[in-house]
Length: 269
Image (cartoon, rainbow, N blue to C red; front, side, top):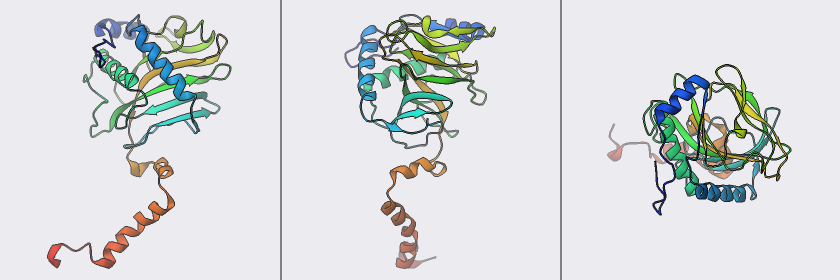
């Protein structure tokens, strides 16, 4: 449970043991009305405004690195069509309310998975962490290929919050999860904004093509657990570095040697 600046409870009370038992049995648990409707509306308005702004066409990021800047991308490929925002915890958040709710739900998810309460918020030697994200699947176009998630020996369990509603903002498609018995579950038809969906990411899941309704599409919020790369491992860091800065950095060691700057103070060895 966490509270906003006004003292508003942003994440209600839920029993981790009940959620855990349902996930273990069915692969899925939906906690009804866990988030206040006012907070959901504010997040929805904020993100619809963000996605209406400047968005870069770029592939989905699966391997973020330490220090990466926040990004908003649109990606179209043979595996998905979506807008996605990447809100990394070391940056100023796109939307402070979304960041706060996401961290509160991550802590509940950790309790459900019987791991450290704040796992993913602080960096450890294995570089396991979370980042906050929303995804917008545009009406008439958005979808995500069915897949299964894996992350070493951890319980790779997700939470998810709908910020638009099936039956109103869109009528066709949405999140599906194959439960423990293999049945394909139309999750979005079972959840409303304010409900929180928990599911086992190792169960096959995806997003069927979105369409119909008011045409707003499917907007969701969650945090993604990842193993963060170092900047040296990731070529995407170079996108933010000018040619001038890159050349200057490469020449700096030569300059130090020429000026004798690599010698200890006093010239002693």
